[in-house]
Length: 260
Image (cartoon, rainbow, N blue to C red; front, side):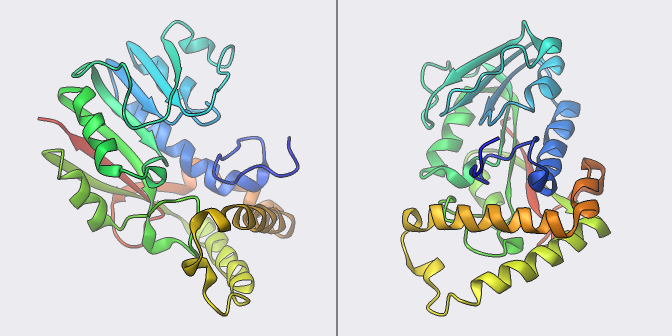
């Protein structure tokens, strides 16, 4: 494992990521209950979701801007999976009306033209097809994340999706007492760091100038939380999170949009 890896690409191998990883894992487990037919994933990441989702599909295409080696990682889905490397949008060389489902987890907040991103997803979905999308809930963010172009409230994401899709189900990912305990400890730790930002530079400086300092501090903070709360952090599982109707206190937005 690298000494410092970006906290934007969550690792199942780094215990300090467990709080976030288990939340991401839940998205794949819930999506696996909903999907069928031909499925497109936008944002492969490290590929840990492929084996969860692909067995529930007839064909699974997963794309990412970085090359991801998922060969040998997914024996249960070996003959169904195709990986494509591309920057999106657009969805290059992907035919219109060709997918039953599109899933994209923790991606849309990184996309400059989120409207074009959704238009492309709408284009490649069949009539009756569905998009399952997750993204951080802006109301629960502890500080500005300079890797994100923007974040969304429940109302903002619903409004955006309705510019393309005819039906939108607004769900959110919530945590139990263990999750809220970690969140409180994390909030206190972040406050100790940001108290030095007396000129509010996190909101004044361009995103790109802040990305590396943010990443270093975020990673160090996660590891400090792990060292001080080993049992709490490593004990968190996806079962500590639940999905229900979204509100301002959910950690992630988990929306399902349908093309009628």
